[in-house]
Each structure stands twice: as C-alpha cells, then as structure tokens.
Amino acid sequence: MLGDENNNDLVNLDAIDRAKCALLVIDELGDPTGTPLEALLLPPMRQTARLTTAARAVGMPVIFSNDAHLPGIDRELALWGNHGIAGTPQAQTSPLLDPQPTDYVMEKRRYSGFFQTGLLLLLNELGVDTLICCGMDTNICVKHTVADAYFNNFNIIVVDDATATFLVGNQEEGIEYMKVCYAAKVIDTDEAMKFIEG
Picture (cartoon, rainbow, N blue to C red):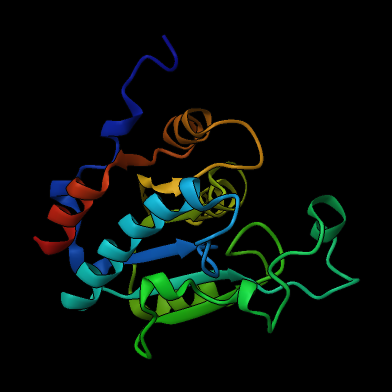
C-alpha cells in the first residue's frame, strides 16, 4: 500500500559522502535569552552550536540561511509582523552559534532559503549533494527550505532536536511531513554528531 514504506530509510547515512555535505542552519537568529521564547529556543540552539562546531572541525561547510526582510515591502511581514529586519540584530546569526568568517550567510526574504537567493549556486559551487538541516520554525522556514532542497534533488537530513516550532502546528507534525513528503532522514543531534565526525 502507498505510504507503507519507511521513508526514513530512503537516505542511507552509510552511503552518504561526508565530503559532499553541508550543515544548513535556518533562521537561528539573535539571542533568545531573557525572552518569552527562551525555554523553547535555547535547547535547539545549543544543539545546533554542537553541530556547527563539529562541522567546522572536519571542514564541512556551515551555511546560515537568515531572514533579512525589507520593512514595508516584504509580504511575510503582513502575516507575522516585523521580524528579521535586514541590518538589525534580529536578522543576524545567533551569537550562541559562534559564527566564524569561514561560514557562509545567505540572506532571504521569503520562507525558503532557496527562493531568489544564491543558495543553490553556492551549494553547486561547493559540490554539495546532501544537506544537514536544522533551525526555526520547523513548520515554516525549515519545511519550505527542505521542500526546495528536495525539489532540487538534494539528500536531506533533518536534526529534529536542533529545530523548533513556535508559530504553526507542532513539532511532530512538521518533522513527520518532511520525512514522508521530502524523504528526509530524521535523526537527533547525537547521531548527527557521529555522522559529521565520521
């Protein structure tokens, strides 16, 4: 019956060439410490910090896909209010992730990190065929970015405890959707660390 197969087995970690992987961090911006979302956002950000450190240590590209909205223009702001305005601290990679000059930052004005950005060109130039994805919000920017990654024929790994949902739906729905519809391999940070470190 359609859908009976275990989609989480479609991406075989043992068959992935780590030299063709990149860590893609989606909208982990600013510092949530002291904000109403601190308890929700800090744990996945700490997990992402482990991933960025591990990726850099083995020479794996670390790419930050960051909101950089234009006030009064971007349609998204009408839905969610002002957030991630270009040039503000809220549109900068979280300092908790210790961004480095060797990292790549791709600004975006829509949910997907691929939509009218240079992300696809960058990944092609880096020779990447597999993305290890984490970030926020699971059901919006992460899901739309993963969708475009799938449409562009990338292997997709989603690190579930390095993502967070706080605007639409719940975490389990978003993770399951990406697993079923986009063949994402869903793993936790410990498993991702083992994969990155080889």
